[in-house]
Length: 394
Image 1 (tube, rainbow, N blue to C red):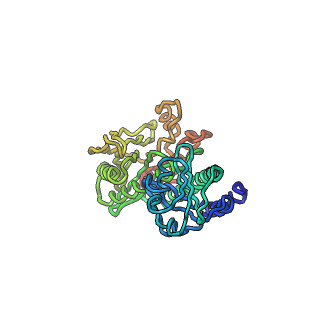
Image 2 (tube, helix red, strand yellow):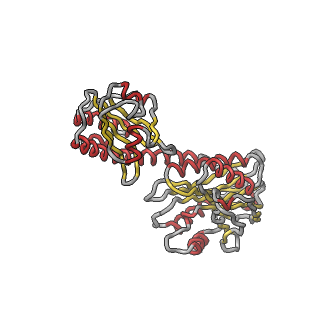
Image 3 (spheres, rainbow, N blue to C red):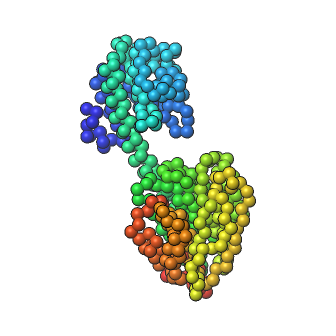
């Protein structure tokens, strides 16, 4: 009954409800509930219940180590109760319901605690060793389902968040053309790479490429916060290095422990120069007529979120020749295992040319990525300054 193939098509909440309903029949209990470990808090929250639905409706929370469920979570051992009252459980719903005996088991994934599964009886019959063994089997089934569904939900939420944070439309800047690419790592959850291109009221153009450490939903959430903060601080008409300093202070205060690298470039019409500030990020690659492609010579500074980063940064202003092409990117484009970064930079430089932005982006992805399976996310922004301000092919 617990391995019914039909269960695989249910979402997490419906799956838990179905499993708990079957548990009530198999073990002959009156109540059953699943409490899951709440992220960012030292406690359990009621997720699904049968017979004691008020636990979920009231948003019951149980601190680790407190009461019946809290004790199971703390010890990661099964617990049986032959008396249910204020001295043995912390949740009054349980004794007010008239439950006389209870049995609970931890929900584990290896050494990781996911939550607690508990059942109860109104008639006072004690639970046996066989009941405990069977409930632990059910708990293992539920743990596997929770992991699978949570991973799928996280992937979907992360993908939706990530796509929503990439600019839907690139700005129109006379004399400039753009091309962009975003490719996720093939065998990992989505990460925190992003790019942003926007203008402010003064007409100033901002180009930002960044990479938040880590993968999954949390990295994407931090990425969204950093992106939003950077846009907000850019409206203050501050320099790129000052904006990065402000973002850094915000991260240290509200997202302590997060870390990100960022390349931030600012151009004023008619876009003859570009002012760049880096926070632990690789510098852009520039190709100009009659010159080999080369990395921009920009003073580096530590990534955002590190203890070393809480100091004032500096920026570098670079002249852009007509027809110059600039490539901004995240390290997933150039890094390879057991390979020097210099090799990656050289590969990128060889793929650069003085050509329309879309052609350059295509060539970079063809020659730098090719058939290589990306082990990290890749974000790429190519900007070309058109000769005489004319619009080039895109």
